Length: 111
Image (cartoon, rainbow, N blue to C red; front, side, top):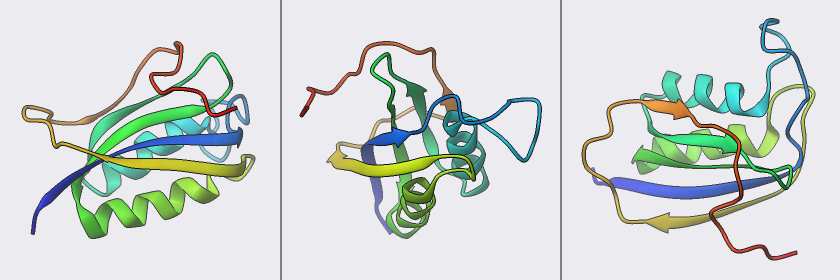
């Protein structure tokens, strides 16, 4: 099987939807990291200053599809209205999935 890398951006109520200290209510970034790690995927995610969550995931295609389905629903308190994704060239040297600091989106806005 071949390794794929997908960039994603999630729109909706995906930030500030829970408390990091309560395992039932987690932020979308924490949810994404937990799910990606459970699937053995590599990459990163972060909140953006415009209220979205974005990131990149890398791994086997079927495993990525499973994670994208989870991200399309989000954690219990989230309300996902749209998810964008695009294929990227795989990166060498990543060994885990991380949550990065909030910053401006890397992707051109479509709004």
